[in-house]
Amino acid sequence: MGWLSWTAFYCETDCAKHPSGCINEQLYKVQADLMVSEGYKDVGYEYVNVDDCWAQKQRDPATKRMVADHGRFKSGIKALADYVHDKGLKFGLYTDIGTTTCAGYPGELQEGDQGNYFQVDAQTFAEWGIDSLKVDGCNVDTRKMGPLYEQFGRALNDTDRRIVYYCSMPFFQARDEGGPKYKPEEIDFELMAKKCNAWRFFDDINNSWASVRSIIRYYEDGQGTYAKFQGPGAWFDPDMILAGCKTGQGITTEQARSQFAFWSIMSAPLLMSNDLRDISPDLKKILQNKGMIWVNQDERGALAQQVLSGDTGIWLKPLAKENEFAALFYNWNDDGRGYVLNLACPIENIVNDIDGALVYDVIEDFKFVNDVKRGYMLGFDMEPFGVALAKLVVYKRDNGVSDAWRTGNITRIERKANEPFPCFVTRPR
Ligand code: GLA
Image (cartoon, rainbow, N blue to C red; front, side, top):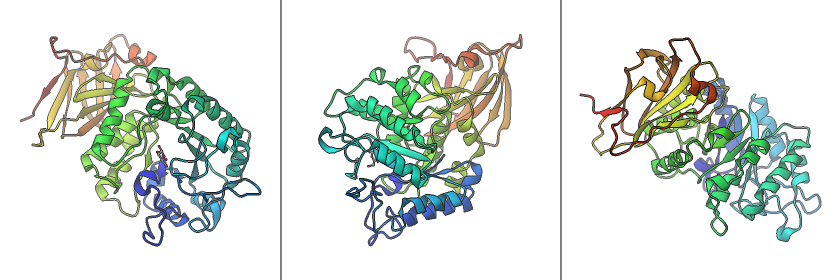
């Protein structure tokens, strides 16, 4: 959990024109201050992460080290990392596994297959005291990425600093424009899970519901394929949290809550990209919702899987504690008139081998909803683009353990035109 500058501030380097909204040391210091003073740190946000555009365009000619931009980061990266550490927070930096970053700043490879800067950069970053490193994937042959990420990971491990390692390989391989465009099943997620702590998958998020929806749809399509690769220390990263982000077209408060809930049930990194100087009370409530954060931080770290597909549906994630699940009910419908919908399913269609479940509303402070026995319905009203997030404590008559909980295998009910619908969607009166 933490904060990352990209989607809120992109590569704004003109500090004369945008003194409080450009990529400079002041920006990260202010966000770090607010992370503490506004209570974000208390609920679990930890990392203040720099993205692209922090470096001088040229390395130091003598030492070959990367150098922070002389004008915008006058005190240097080490001083900034120290500042962040003094607040009790952690500090993240950014580089790229190719010759240059996506915005044209120095990367890890030398031009023309002349070798790499893995050792010198790992050493430098460790000396600066970074705690996490996002390693982007522009400007490199995507077919060579696997071994490169592995090698750079080794160089980071050879330093005496523990550094969270973000890799971007799946995203770049899946979209490779000039190259082979890997299908998801051709991507080496096993390598990612072994050698990286998190990996971006699918396009850059932008501040619009269309973007959030397209990311969710991508994970729907990979149902069952991806879940086995994720666990503690190995995370799919669907990109940044938008609540409070001001760039682009923007999303509504309801949509911001839905994104946060979905990222939570996916156990995804919660990296806000916003300006903590300007967050409305409603959005702050979402960003600091203890229930959603609890679902996100559950120790089992499972990737949620879709139980019921369609424009209204359900995702389910087995939690660490025996027989506990998180269930996300969503309504991506909007006919323009703002109708609330109710989605209700027999409880055994949500978790299929149980005799009932105690249900709690996670977003509403774990309020007890009901004891739903086999054959009875569990349902929630949802605004257009809205969600409900529940904790289910399931039980069986023989006091046994739910199979779905034990194996983590979730059966998806596909909606088929000529079969009876396994749940009900109605407009509440
Ligand atoms: C890529 C990444 C983004 C961001 C930019 C920076 O597009 O996916 O998250 O880091 O590069 O240039």
